[in-house]
Image (cartoon, rainbow, N blue to C red; front, side, top):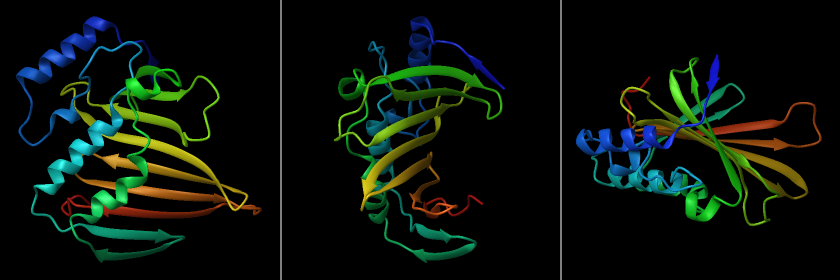
Length: 202
C-alpha cells in the first residue's frame, strides 16, 4: 500500500536538523535523507554513493562477488578497491539537483509495504543521448531519516539491442548490478552480480 504525498519544506528542514544533531558515527554525511532544500529537489544520489565508497575505503573488509546466471551462483573473493570499480557505471553522469532538475521530476510517498519514505525520479522531458539513467528510487527510514537503499535503472542500445542495467545499493552491506538483454527471444537474458562487503548479511 502506498500513500502519496509531496514532502513539504518544513519536513525537509526537520529531517535535516535531526541529522545534524544525531548523525550515527558509522554513516557519512552523504547518507542523510535530505541535505538541502534546493528547489526543484533531486536527492544527491552520486554524492551519496561516493560517500559510501569513501567509508568502505577506510574499512578492513574483503568483499565477495557473487555471480548469478539462471539458477547458478558462483562466488569469488575480491579486493576492497574492486567495489569502486563495480559501482563505476552508476557514478556518471552525476545525479543531483544541479545536473538533473531540468530532466527529472521527483515524487515522494510513504510505502507501507517496505516501511520507507520513497523518493522516486522519472524523466519529465525526452532525455538527451548522453543520459542513460531512466529511473531512480531512494528509500529512507521514516524513523531514523537515514537512507536504506538506492535503486537506479539505465537503458542503452548495444549492437542494435536494448540492454537494461539495474543497480541496487543496500546501505553499508552490498550492491548488485542486474543486466537484462532484450534480445529477440521470448524470455530476456538476465545476469546479476552482487558485491557484498558485509559478509554477515545473509
